[in-house]
Length: 177
Image 1: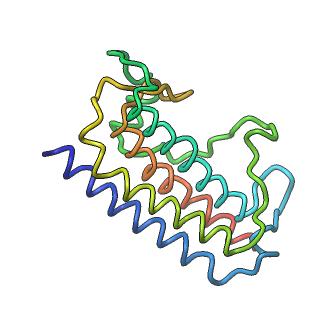
Image 2: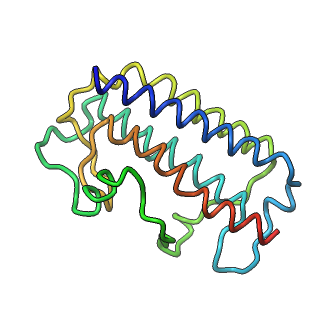
Image 3: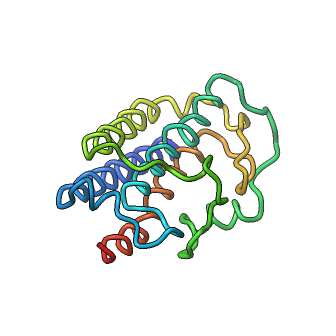
């Protein structure tokens, strides 16, 4: 029951964050969303695409793999970084640099509508998975490159932590507009 309550609280938080990001699109033109103050940082729109792509393909994708038994049945757990992040309930308040490669650099948005639709898909997927999380065995895990082996519930929690982590970046990028 504690896992169900935790999942529902996580879903509420995801919903609030998705709504906050969706509302955050309103004041900007597509040109502003594509603006980059320098070559070493993402635009606000790229950050949005990163959030959407990470949630849909990494986090929700990993939940699906856990559900479909495409995961590793393992007692292995989180890395030291993973243990620390989950104990804190958030990523540390530092800038995390992803590898400088086209694979990790999100594309510029095509439109505000594309971003809003992407956020809506994240919300829909989170809603569809929350009721199924307690049915997925906790020893079915998918390895995160930095955090170690995570089960479906932990991947679900990571959606909210990742969305929350990027609020600081959003504020910084908005100040530069």
